[in-house]
Image (tube, rainbow, N blue to C red; front, side):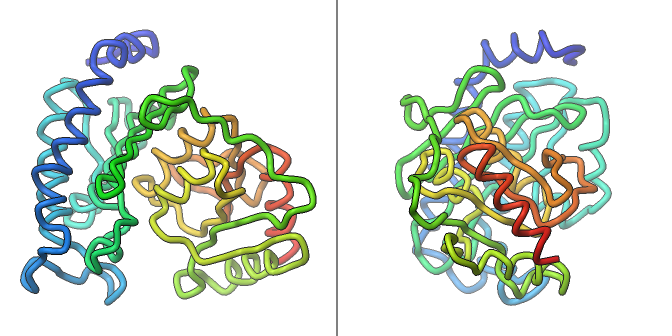
Length: 281
């Protein structure tokens, strides 16, 4: 059982590559063999027709839960599918044990439709602090990693998010309005203004990767489920970016955030997006 931050660092120094191997194997064994091969009985709805789950989601999460739990005895896993089955398991984010935050297939709708825009997300946190993350897009053969204080990398190359090009419209990926409250919808609509080019988001994990790479300038999201955001938030932060809620505070994976929130290539862009979100609400 990990007792302090130093031993988390020691664990990562010894086992970060083992986590990467587990993420790759989960995709190779449970996800990719089902991509573009799903039978009708392997796809189910959860909350509605746009909230899908597949056998790939379930089996990849079970694989990762087993391997990650054995890698770090005393840790717990907060996975999207396990929380769907037992919502109380989400409370582990508030506890003292190290937590693996797992989204086995982020972008399930894209996965079901045979689109390559999906990924597996894993993050390691404790007491609300993110220490490491892995973002694997197997159909694109990409794997991005971040360790707190040690930078962000894509396939071994350092990621630096940089700053938006002066005079160019900000490229911002946003929550779909169907999944927002009226207040959040008003806040997000404020991004439809001069100097900003908003668009609907795809896989949250891949949108964060685009920000960390400097391909996109920001995201503006209206939900706070940790498995969608944890890996990407650390990736953006370690690439030089910043994240802020509508209250002007960093996003907390433990919840209670003023929504919508943003993650951006740099702090100035994050503050600009937040100012617009505040104006809209």
